[in-house]
Amino acid sequence: PGHQAWWKESNVYQIYPASFKDSNGDGIGDIPGIVSELDYIAGLGVDIVWLCPCYKSPQVDMGYDISDYKDIYEKYGTLGDIDNLISGLHKRGLKFVMDLVVNHTSDQHPWFQSAISSKDSEYRDWYIWKKPKYAADGTREPPNNWSSHFGGSAWEYDANSDEYYLHLFATEQPDLNWENPLVREAVYDIMRFWLDRGVDGFRMDVINYISKDPAMPDAPITNPSTKYQKGAMYYATGPRLHEYLQELGKILKEYDAFSVGEMPSVFDPAEIIKAVGFDRNELSMIFHFEIVGLDHGPTGKYTPGNWALTELKAIVDKWQTFMQVNDGWNAIYLENHDQSRSVSRFASDRPKVRKVAAKMLATFLGFQSGTIFVYQGQELGLANVPKSWGIDKYRDIESLNRYDEKVAAGASQEELDSILAEMQKKARDNARTPMQWDTTDNAGFSRVTPWMDVNEDYKVWNAESQVNDPSSVYAYWQSVFRLRRKFRDVLVYGKFALVDALNESVFAYKRVYGSTEALIVTSFKDSETKWTLPKEYSKPGKVLMTNYDRSDIAGEIVLRTFEAFVLLVQ
Ligand code: ISL
Ligand code: CA
Figure 1 (cartoon, rainbow, N blue to C red):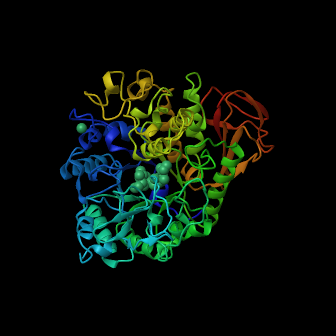
Figure 2 (cartoon, rainbow, N blue to C red; figure 1 turned 90 degrees about the vertical axis):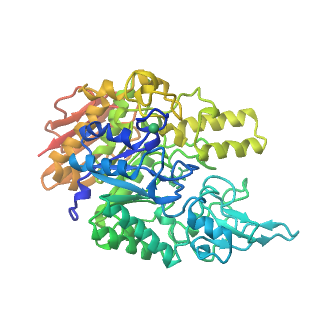
Figure 3 (cartoon, rainbow, N blue to C red; figure 1 turned 180 degrees about the vertical axis):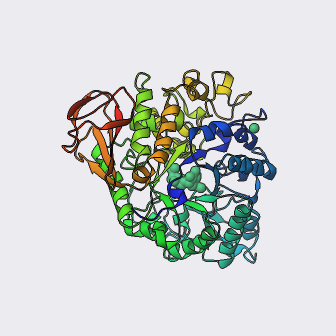
C-alpha cells in the first residue's frame, strides 16, 4: 500500500481570499473574515486550509502577481492577521498552507523595477531577457513565437534596453530566472520566512515551469489561426526542473512540510513520479490538468469540447494506477479558483437534481486514493454564474483578454456570443463569485456591494441553510471525511481498481485493503440506468453512504439520476 504519511491522511479546503468573507465592509474578502469562519471550516472535517495568494500585489492577476513576498495585501489585512489565522487554525488542529508563486513576480516587485531600470542593474539577470529577432523586411519580432497563457506574445519589449523579457502569463508577471542561484536563494529565504512563522507547507504555482530550455526554440505551429504558439514543451519539464525541486524538497523536509505542486502540461508518468515518488523528496503531490482539460475544444478552452465518461475513467485509472505502482501520491480535485463549478460542468445544476448531483461528485472524488481538495463553495454545491451574465460582469484577466482579442479581430456578434456561452461553462470567474453564507443582502458575504456580483441563486444555496441540515451537500461532505478517517486503511491506503470500465453511464471503482473492500458506484447519467454489481457481490453489502435511500444492495439494480453509493465488505 505504499508509505504512510500524515499528509496522505489529510484533506484540504481551499480559500480564495477576495471572495470568502468581507469583515470591514469594503466589498472585498479579507483575513479577519476568514478568521471569523474557522468553526465553519473545521466543522467540515478537513485537516488543512490552503489560502490563495494574500501577499502585497497590484492584483493584475488576483494576487498571483506578487510585489512583496513578506508582506500582506493591505485590503486583505496585516501580518498580524495572518498570525491570528495560523493560531486559530492550529488551535483547532488544522494546518495552514500558503500559495508560493515563484515562477514569476509582479512587474512592481523591487527586483523587477531594478532589473528593468538598466542593463547594469544587479537584478538584471534575475529575469529572462533576450535580444529581438528581425523579419526579412526589418520588422522587430519577439525572440521566439511562444504565446502567453493570457494571450498574445510571451515576450514584452523594453525600448530602453532594446531587449525583451519573458512573461508566460500577463505582461505584468515577468518570469524569474531560476538559472541564477541568487534567485533560488531568495525563494528559499521566502519559504523559510513563512515556515518559521508557522505555515505548514505550500501550494506551488506552476512549479514545473521554473526551468526553461535555455535555447528557447520556436514552438511548432499547433494552431495556425494564431500568431503565437504553445511553448510548454520547452518549459513544462525543463532540463533543471528536478534539480530545483530537490533543492526545494530539502527545505520542505527539514520542516516536515506539506507540498502540492501545480503542474500543467505534464502527462508522462515517469516525469511525474520523479516529482512525487516517495523516496525522491521533491513534492508530496501535484495537480494535473487532464480532467479539467476534458471539455476544452480543439482550438482552446473557449471552444466547445465534448467528453465521454470512458475518457474520464481512462484518466482516473491512469493516475490512480501509476501512483500506486510507483509509491507516489495523488491530489484529487475537480474545482479550484481557475476552474468552473463541478456540479455545472461534470453533472447538472438543473434545480431538481443539483443536490444529488453535487453529492454524486463528492462520492466520485471523496473515495479515490489521494488527498482530497475541496474549493470554497464546492461543499455547498455552488454552481456556475447565470447564463444571463454579459461580459461586463466578468473580472478575470484571462477571460477579458480572450474576449478583447476577439473583439479586436473583428469577431461577429455570433462568435462573441459563442465565446460568452463557453465562458459561462469554463471561465475562472465561475469559481470566484462571493461565498454564499446566508439569505441576507450580498449573500452575507459583505454589507456593501461586493467586488464581483454574487450568484443570484444564493437565497436557496447558502451555508446557513446547509450546516444543520443532515441531508445537505455540506453534511454529505462531512460524512465523506468522517468515513475516510474511520476506515483509514481501505479508504486512504487501499488499492484502487476500476470496475465496469466500458460503461458510459456509471463510474464504479473499488478500494481494497487486505480482506476489506469498498465498492464506490456513481451514476453520471441524468436519468435512470440499470446496473449489475460485480459477481463477487452476490451477498448484499453494507451501504456506508448514499445520496438516495438504499439499504442492502446485490445483483441487478436501477440507479436513479446521479445516484451514488458506497458499499463496504469486510
Ligand atoms: O486557468 C488557466 C487558464 O485557463 C491556466 O492556464 C492557469 O493559468 C494555469 O493553470 C496556471 O495557474 C496558476 O498560475 C497563474 C494564475 O493566474 C492562476 O490563478 C494560478 O492558479 C499565474 O500565476
Ligand atoms: Ca474587506
